[in-house]
Amino acid sequence: MAGASAGVASGARLLAVRRMRITAVIVASALFMQNLDSTVVATALPALAHAFHADPVHMSVALTAYMFSLATFIPASGWMADRFGARLVFRVAIVVFTVGSVLCGMAPSFAALILARILQGAGGAMMIPVGRLVLLRSTEKGDLVAAMSWLTVPALIGPVLGPPLGGFLVTFFSWRWIFDINVPIGIAGVIAASLYIDDVAVERPGRFDWRGFLLAATALAASMFGVETIGRGVVAPLLAWGGLGLGIAAGAGYGWHARRHPAPLLDFTLMRLPTFRVSVLSGSLFRLGVGAVPFLLPLLLQVDFGRSPVESGLITLASAAGALAMKPLAQPVLRRFGFRAVLLWNGVIAALLLGGGAFFRADWPLTALYGVLLAGGLFRSLQFTAYNSLAYAEVSRARMSAATGLYSAMQHVTLTLGITVGALVLELATAIGGHTRPHPADFSVAFAVVAGLSLLATPLVRELTPEAGAELAAGAGAAAPSPAPSPAGEAIAASASPGVSGL
Image 1 (cartoon, rainbow, N blue to C red):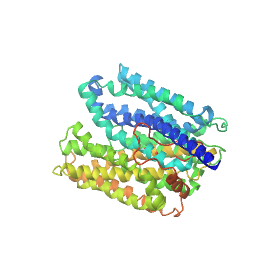
Image 2 (cartoon, rainbow, N blue to C red; image 1 turned 60 degrees about the horizontal axis):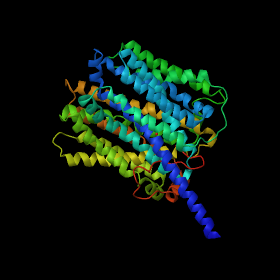
Image 3 (spheres, one colour; image 1 turned 135 degrees about the vertical axis):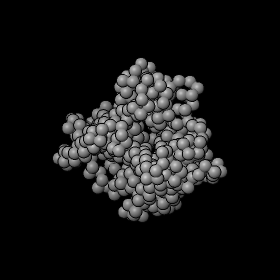
Image 4 (cartoon, rainbow, N blue to C red; image 1 turned 90 degrees about the vertical axis):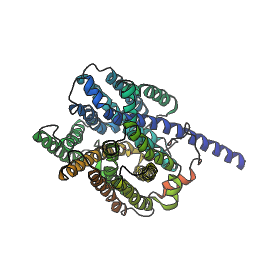
């Protein structure tokens, strides 16, 4: 009888793990589509400028329109998921993003392209946090580390794969193809989500907080606009500084509002939870540095090393390979050393490897470049997995949607700021050096600065106790997948009870 019970339990466990992996693949595919699109468009800007007879500098609006739309709608994602169901909102988000992609590819004018990009951003804003929420609500905490290790992969691969793919499509086909590639992924994602993802019931929220939404959306979008444009010569200085000032004022107004609202859209009382607070604050500093890599590295390889976009893309793929290699290793490493030790020492190693870019030179052998980039991707992947898992260790089921909204907003802002910081430091180093274009020494300064920012994240980890996330680490060991999972059936997680939550 005992053997039969054990067999039933074992069968149920295998079924739960299988279901979790399917859910993880679906969510990861949607996030990969979003992350890929965010970078593939950048490569096509010259072609877009030619097609619409516009100044290439002004074509950056195609990027910023998407980012601002993303920042505007992220605060509403948690409430939408609670009100209409996470699975439904996730599917609708994929549809909106896919329709926006189709309209981008069909755009007859620059204005039409911008409107379509705004629609894409609205869909992406729901896909990012709601996709994570779908995963969290259907994942047991024992499977959380495995889930997050998979969720980290698309965030790391998308920005690396985007530039070479965009260059290939624009060179050999048409700029419209960079948007059309989202269509089959989107259709498959909607079908898969309908068939394999359960909609875990939660208590429906109260009325939508319109005042909080307007304040939070203004704070995020205006601040990003100000930071993106100050000192860049894209808009008048008064407008750039005014945007930053508006964002700060709206942020202060939202803070005042949130303290008085019973259920704010972005609930900063979650910062009282030590694991969530450390994951947000320390993770944000770490992402500031890492966020600059997709901008700095391809520019260094193409501008100073004279590599083609395709060659540059193949070199940067080494970091994605490192991220994939870490996936099966994250669980045993966290189980052996614990979250605090891993975040502390792995963070130092990851920051130093990021700083290794300061020493890259054109005469380096390819094997050396590949080695540094692969190791960097390996340790960064572990760091992201640890942050993204630990963040929700103390979050209750009732507050999970609020936590995903706040965490996603912080991720988006800091990764975007990372690009801005990298670009700003590079411009300053180039100007101080009296160069007309960036030299290797200017890139060295930029890599050193962003690595220093990532290194500043590690002291904050010391706030954690050695036991922080012990339940997750122990569960990860019990729930670890096989060492050699198949790519098609592997992924993140989806089981039965609340779990924990990334780019």
